[in-house]
Length: 133
Length: 180
Image (cartoon, rainbow over all chains, first blue to last red; front, side):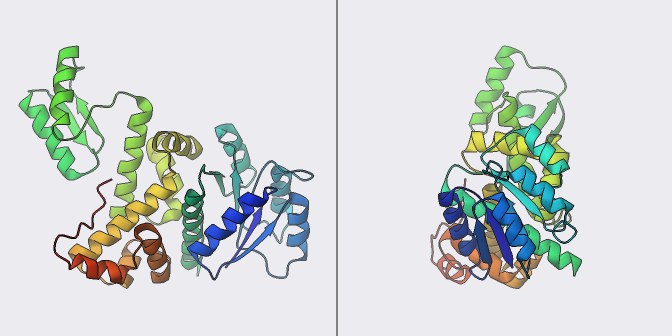
């Protein structure tokens, strides 16, 4: 299984990657620091990630713009995108889901909670795969 | 009010106080008429004996309902896996999931996802202790993606592998249940 985290905060990326390894050390977790790099990475990738966690407030290409680009791309649009943000705005979550985000997750206040969010998302994905196969 | 025993306690209290009700479900009792101030205080005091309390704050009630629904989901195999979790909560409670999640996090200082995972692990513990089920059977019943993931989560939440937990339970007096 492969996960891509797109977040301009290096500490948040580090915490996230640690959580992924705790959930399952066999998961390949890739990280990039902005939307522009994420899109380049995805376009060039031979093996696409199974889930993308996408921050919203990023320089150059925002999370929203990145999400739009992913959903417009025939090759990328099937990848579930979890918006992973400090925002807790209900209206924003509705807007992003209408744009194609699979889920809207507010970043928790402490590092331990990140484990549970990642564990939940991974379970969700693996269960879907099981049902589809 | 998150278990059958709680429901029975509420029923007993209402009947003892001669307060007419239409129905009692997990998390709520539908009374036939509004309570007066003294009746409210008497009922609240009577419930506290059973470590229950009246909630008249909408957000507190919502948090309680979330917990009740999570327990229902874990215990009712027909409800399904995490995939339908957010949609299920949203539909049952009539609120957007982000709103539900925010209310829960503010009140509990923890996420719904954490609560769900820890409650599911509590159920794993019950099934190991009471039903003596194998991990494979438990993983299947509780919709884990694999036994491996069940074991990893179990260790993370409890600090012990399921096999270690099983051995510890054989120790007389070992308190395995998390009452929170």
